[in-house]
Image 1 (cartoon, helix red, strand yellow):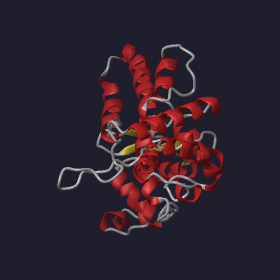
Image 2 (image 1 turned 180 degrees about the horizontal axis):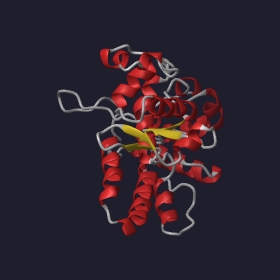
Image 3 (image 1 turned 135 degrees about the vertical axis):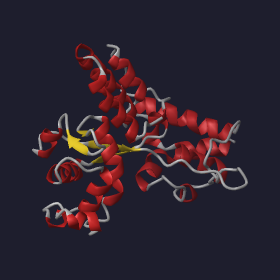
Length: 264
């Protein structure tokens, strides 16, 4: 469902080709689409609010409600990325800026003196995997915009982010399991079609989520319910070995889910 970063960049770049009197409307529509695509919250709620409705915070049925992405506060990393774009002259593409941030002394970086910048090597290995999704998110919200020659420049609220006046939260989408050579997906990669136990576990999760006023994934993710349906734990100890069942959730929901499992 997510557009590639290049799609957002291309769409924002083409705004300049739209007649001036239409640009505000087109930019507003693009921003609304970016908000829908990049959100880690309920997509249906975002869509309905766009049309002036006041929906519940969660619908329990969209992809984010059923299998939520992780939400990461990437504000500090965003400041580093935006700073690197600015200090390298707002003319280079993401690949070059990434090398500067990671401290990679390739020929082009050294030749331009970018290895002597204060932003050179300020991103560690723990933050490095977030750079690409962060770049996509910043492009989607307009904080980074494409230059005429394919580089990156500051735009939108970039200066507010740099000054610490705006936060940057990014949604990391759940990984999709890839099919093996035989064409069959790995265990637990798809919902067990027609499995009455899996459906019963989902129904219990939906009920508990409604009572607590939270999205279903807050109770358990689909992957956890799949493993429950496959392994059929018979005790709290066995249930605690299922991925995604921590001690707190085991205490809060363990007996209820074991009851459903035993009934099947």
